[in-house]
Figure 1 (cartoon, rainbow, N blue to C red):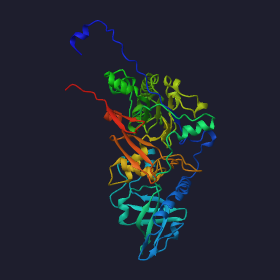
Figure 2: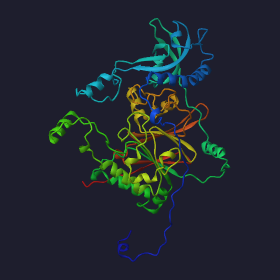
Figure 3: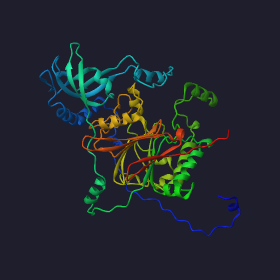
Length: 496
């Protein structure tokens, strides 16, 4: 821009009016919990492991039987065993079960009691492995079998994964593992399969020619605190998505973004647990005893700021909101949607409670969440399952490898309920993947990473690790036609 342009008369130039690309959005109730009286917490978590094994054992046994049909050593063919306790010493065989890992630094109930009684709590664990070696077990309803062997060092394993192992029991009673199989990726639906099926059920003809899809923006870790100093990056993000900043070409790119997905930790700390010193100080200040939550110290600024931010964005584009570890909802997985009462301005764009299954312009959904965008299946989490898997694996820092392992285990939260809080499912484990997604995104990761993995029958899944926006200023944009992501980075330059 020239200096003279600042003092020139208004221009008669006609600018092109941009319209945001439309998209087809279908929410799925995969991780919705029972409602009302049907939701119980008195059940034993052991039933959840048995249900998970029953669901995944046929798939892993099918792959194992195909792989080891002709597996033999010294003329002895590997035999299939129905239970881990049927394994006999010196006999070459294979068996399926649930992995259990003995890890000395894992959370335990004594630590929880210590926190409850104000005993000094230990520092948070970066890894559960103490460095003295792991005890890896294979268990089913009959008992446990200790696994050993150098092959295990090449495998990513956590408690809760369903696997099949082949080998022989040694003189110490341990099972020497020679090879291992996991359930691998499930069936992947073809694009538009769900929408075309729903249309056929409703008596509507299949739409054969569909418009070209746009792009989907994914962000996580907004970490809104309500402080005035942390709003500039959010304002830049809002202006970019609304097309109110940058040059016309970038505004055209922003108009192609058809939906924003917020993958957890939108608030910095919505329900902090006060320390003992904070409770004592608050009691002295108020002159009365305070136990637990104190309404007088509640700060509504973060939720109010987030509500206003969403209300400014929603007239222009739809939003899907996943809760995270720091957001105001249950901490147990699957986390229920953030309640509409938290959004007095933005909830006008939500569906009515009785129409929860229908698509809404503002979809406050569960964590994990599953939905279709322009015919492609999206599966995403706020990051807790991957962060917990990271603590199990001492010699691996690659988050994409852990995401791939979760897909091949067919589990969105493999370490629940062992080290990750979750609902005690009874009839079946909802964390078992029924169908393979096209995109698997995980929020609140250290950095942006992406890869494509393939399944045994041609499935292809795009993995996307979404970084924390508060720390990196990065927004991930995925082209829905090609499923290729790119990153838009926002930065604030401070005076030196």
